[in-house]
Image 1 (cartoon, rainbow over the protein chains, first blue to last red):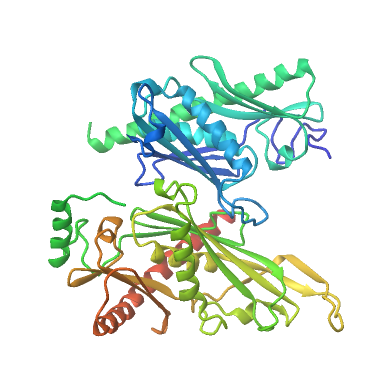
Image 2 (cartoon, each protein chain N blue to C red; image 1 turned 180 degrees about the vertical axis):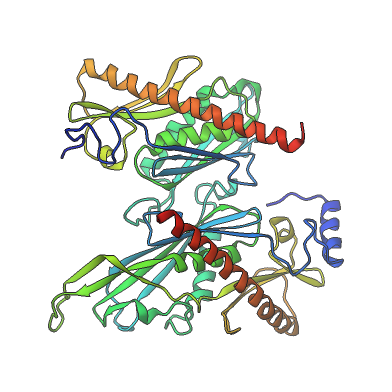
Length: 241
Length: 289
């Protein structure tokens, strides 16, 4: 199948280095301590953060750092074919773990010992790159909850199809069987905190594709910063400052 | 659920007694309702409904299936509710399953009528493509995103809006198959059929607190209800279903009083929902153009 046509356009009309449209909204869940909706094209996820609060399960209590927990769920209607999946299948457990580890690496957990932070991400629409979208939504929700972080971790995926590195794969490109590199990146510290790749890829190209994903992460970080700044301005305005 | 001090409880109860609730509403007034339709592009119809801080999404997916042998002239509808952990941390893992099951059964009872499908809000015979052979199966999936009380009413409103937004492709039966053979079908991707949702009822939950009952209770108010009755009423003012969930027993005379109150309120809610849905549909239509 042709994923990049001779004019250099992808199936959805994007250029190889082009990201899908981003949209973010802070404060989608009224009762959560922090929440956000994050959209990357047709992928739409919602994240809510509860905490820092008292540890619910005392055996998990840690005296020197906060406990970070994460749950990833997909809505029944999020995929093209309607499927009723049991909660906690292997894929969601793995993604929950990935998100938890990524967020744990950027939260200053040592500042909040003996407490617990819950991150819940819910996929409303899945069109490829849900794990990246979930990490981005979780970052925004954590920032909204006012939880101290080292940096705003962002995530983006990149692939390699038809001998072209492609940024931010959608579902069709993702299921094409080519390599899919997901990167989690701390833009200010310039550090990679998450790196996952499936399928095989020549060594000299890995670097290119990874670099492309990192560029994507940086662009998302810029956008997230804008959204947060706008949100803060709104809050300032409402308080009459 | 909600941790309230004795003073807070007293305050809420006192407010209800004096017909001014803690958010300034009267006992029989609803929170503002916002409806947005077409929120899930992959579904045949979808809607998001917000009532105060309660937010739910409903989506309708249609699939071709076989009607059951008992009712060859009727399509099938199934309602599923999911409580996302996003709404409440206690819904994590399997925590929300009990509530999900309770809500979906209550919705099926109120919207789909009895097991025979008689008295259903949706005209099941309109889902038939070829009698006894092919029908549309509607899967109504709803998701609770933010919970602040009165989930059942919000879910019913969202389902009503999602059904109003639903477009089912027109099916042409190409070859007339004889006997038991399944006829071949051709699903049109241009022509769609719209649903008649005028008969879909609304659900009104009356929560009893002390001597009075209130509509559209927030989760704070729900946390010290003595009992709640959910009544589904259609446009004609007929009662389509009734569920009483938990709490103390009610005097039979109170129940009939509640029903008449619900009938009266349903008219107001129905017209408000209708105008919200048509406004949302008009807005969605503009975007498509």
